[in-house]
Length: 323
Image 1 (cartoon, rainbow, N blue to C red):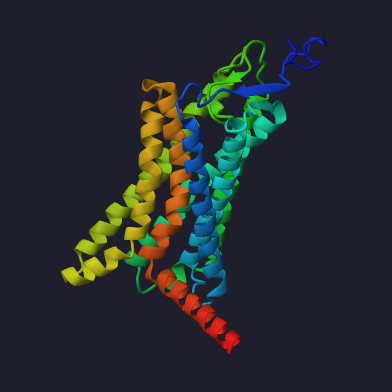
Image 2 (image 1 turned 45 degrees about the vertical axis):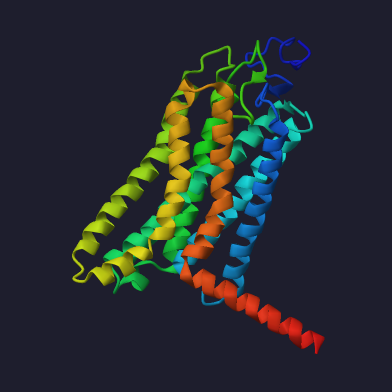
């Protein structure tokens, strides 16, 4: 009973524990090497996303609506990996498995909000590609800076409100028995299943949110590429089709990188062993923010050329300073 606060003694309806215990990565041999991998993946993610954001800020030619969405993707990836990896390493490598009730809910809010925005950012980029190929002559009129900023602002609002509802429903639960969360972070499913009273609203949100955050965005992206392929089929020459489609390859890579692991984990997570699910989910969380900047640097010609130009200017300034 040491875990519970004074609410239990005062006979208040909602019993909230002082602490939760995170039990993830239990019994996995040589798990410390995995945390070393997470550290290097996070370091690469940090450097890569900061580099992309810096290039976009310094190069005034990269100020199109598309690059606003790319900047927001890099920012979201940076914040997402920063919210996730340092806390996981601190929790399990240094054995700080206890997390207070309020900190757990805050942790849940940031992880799910930023994860939702990773998905919705790809929708924003798919809108950009769809408009660029369907309306090439009117693209600059239809997709303006104001339009893209409005889309991104709506997506942020949608994510924040959705996750606030998700977390808010957790505060309506009483935790009168176990406080052990069978996950590596304050995951919504393992937390609400610890509730002793009616968990139906939380269970409903657990079913609705993956559809709203993964299913609907993915369906929209697939539909947008069906429209893109149909539009490209009307182009007379194969060379022009390939050239137009190459502008989408970076985005397609990001979509596959995010949605394939996430879909597999959520569809088959209950059928695989707990530790395998935990590792799979942690990888699907850290791999996209790590590889996204690499994909965009090497598959987006404008960013690649801008990075080369900035590095060249830096080298020339060093030579000038030495002379």
